[in-house]
Structures are given as C-alpha cells and as structure tokens.
Figure 1 (tube, rainbow, N blue to C red):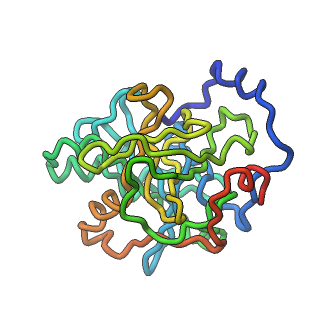
Figure 2: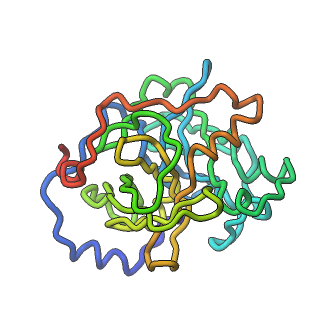
Amino acid sequence: MKHRLARSALLGVIGAMVVPAGAAAASTAPIHPGVQTFTNGGQCTSNFIFRDATSTYIGQAAHCSGTGAATSTNGCTSGSLPLGTPVTVTGASRPGTLVYNSWLTMQARNERDANTCQYNDFALVRLDPADAGNVDPSVPGYGGPTRLGTSAGRLSTVYSYGNSSLRLGVTQLSPKQGTVVEVAGGGWSRTVLTVTPGIPGDSGSAFMNASGEAIGVLSTLMLAPLPATNGVGDLARELAYMQARPAFSDIRLVPGTRPFKGNLLGAILGG
C-alpha cells in the first residue's frame, strides 16, 4: 500500500470525477495527521500524533519501511529498513527518524501468534526537535481524534483521511467515510469499505469511529470479501504491543485541538 510515485489507470478515474469546490479544512500547522511520509523513496500517509515527556512522534504503517514485495505483509517474516532510518515528513524542516517498527519488534521478540504477525503494522517516526512546535494533531476536515478508542464492531461507521500523491493534489478525495464489514484476525484487523477506497500511498492513514476516537491504521488493499476494501489494523492493540516495551511505555496519542465532526460533505467542503 506504500508506493513509489507510480502513475496508474486510477488517474483517469480521478480526472473524470466531479468534485465540489473548496478543499478540506487546512491544519493550522504544517505537520499533522495525513501528511505524506517518505521512507527510502516509498510514500505513505501518516496517521496520528504521539508524545512522551521528551519527544513528538508521527505514526505510519510498519510496512512503509518494508524491503520486500508489496505482497510481503507478514511482519514476522518480512524485511524492514533498520531503526534510525531517516524519514522525510511533509511540512517538516528536517527528516524524522524511524524509532519504532512493529515488524522489527515482533522479529526481535520471536513472536509466534499468527494474527499478531499478520496484522500488527505500526511504526513511529520521531520528529526533529526543531519541528516539534509546528505540529497540529487534528485530522484535516474532521477534527479529532477525541481519544484512543478500543474497538470498532461490524457495521460501525468509520472516518479516514488519505493523502496519496496518486490523487494529484485533489484534496476533496482525501476525506473518507465507510463501514466495517468484517472483524478479522481475532480482533487485530477490520475489513473496511469506504468511499473512496484507500489506494497505494494511503498506507498508514488514520481511522476514527463515529465518536472521533482513534481506532485504526490503514494497512492493506484487499480483494476479498469485497473488492476495493481495506484492511485496518486495531490501533489500541498495536499501541499496547509497543507500550509493553519500557522504552515506549510513556508514549501516548495526542488528541486533536479541533472538535470532531463526523460529516463527510463538511470535510470535503472544508467545513
């Protein structure tokens, strides 16, 4: 779901769509959920902002630093660039640093649970201290997140914001609203159908529930059970796995500074 700025037939679809005037509400700072991240040339979309007592972080998917094929999705067997890899974050004046990757952590811990291996897909990029004051934790268009959520059941409504460069800067296509169609992996993942679906470059995108709680991270583009659905990792489980390591135990989600509004049209029009 990361991509290397390749063009596809999707561009013709985007060009043919009629979009409303106006863009999703701009953030008040250059670094925010939904900005693009670039790891060794691979582009993804960031999810939420996190902090501890000393640093500010932005989330992305673990596979954004993957070294294997696009079909390499099992974090216990797939390769990744090492911790310390520089990550370019759109809006930042200096590169961030990859400091946590669930794939590398699972391999170091010799993780054996099949669902955890398949669906734990989360990474953190530590922002340079020079950029820590240039962060808005609010999700564009929607506002929020209000806090960390614990679940999203089948048929729940969800909201997301993708920022793949394949959309050629058409920001009206970035806000998404959809429905959970299946809970998979023993609770580690949700199969989600949104309009429009996540596409390559949207990997890592934030997902919120109808209350604006942060509940997931976009991981995969799926062909089943429905075409053009997405696999969304359970953020609470991914964070709990990370926080079990002492070095990351104090890292917490930062709520948005703007109220959450679950209104897709308002997000598209910049409301």
